[in-house]
Image (cartoon, rainbow, N blue to C red; front, side, top):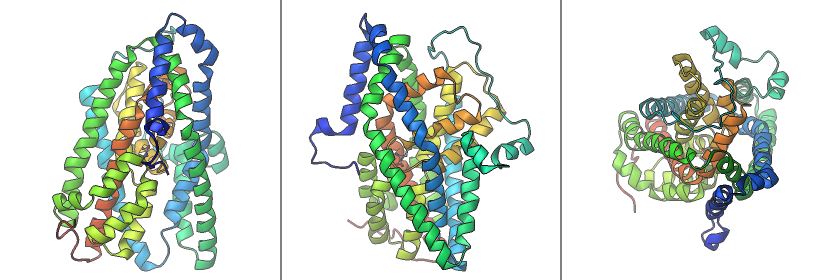
Length: 420
Ligand code: ASP
């Protein structure tokens, strides 16, 4: 857990990342920037490899444990359906908001990619609905996994997790506790790799600045604007409307009751680290029963990430546009759907959202493009504040889900007053 306020500022990850970023930029801008980039820039590439290394096991364990821990029995089945239904609606709205903001701002236009003389990439998108289904349903799980075909992997994990919930208690608990333990191990590994972020960011910044100069950051400002507005719209308009229409509670009272988890989410950048505070607050202040909150919130922390869905959508399209690719309607549809899946597959730890962006890049055929890597690197260097904001949106969407499902389950007294 990263939220340790007693640490001096220079030992906190986000300050280290900012310092590393400035150092990388500073050295990259000096006349010997190229020389240094050649000598030590590889640490950035190596860091990206580490991130890509953990995607598959992280996504598999995260989804299977999230879905499988739903329990069994008819009541749980019913609650599972309601919760999943709400999660899908809110995440889809989030991804669509990202799409809208991308089209309004076009953040990738004129992005200064290094001119290698290569043609802009042609995006691979399925031609028909059946084609799309064929890119999601694997004929062979292991083949899909080794080819890094994440959509297929995610599909399998969801149906596998759902099948686990139908087993009798004995085998079901065995599987859920094993996968749950594996997931914790993967989270621990991810957290440790993320600690290397300052070194990775230094190398990545150095290479980016030495090769493209500072210009690229101007376009990052537009990316930040598109993403920031998308997050704000989802947080201030969409989720309050969902709360009001589905749960019949006052969005203002809900927001006031949720102050603490929102602040913790903001300062830890981790929905998982925030979960204990979210659970306590939703029970004690929002007033949702233990039964509903202990079901919706842990599952939400794992699979429901609206802020991440906005980011995946804006981020992937930004990269494709920066590379000069032609972004048609079918590409946008594929990006929205894969952004949804990537947000489900992202782990609830800092920067996990940027790790899974490769799922979408892979789905549109630019997963291995070296220029795309450089752009992800630039995005990584400014990710921390964006991560703080999207984690708060992720956590908020979970608490809205608890209130909505509580209301659907006939509970009364949810968000009746602002409780201290
Ligand atoms: N940090 C986010 C969370 O824990 C995930 C992300 O990076 O988008 O919810």
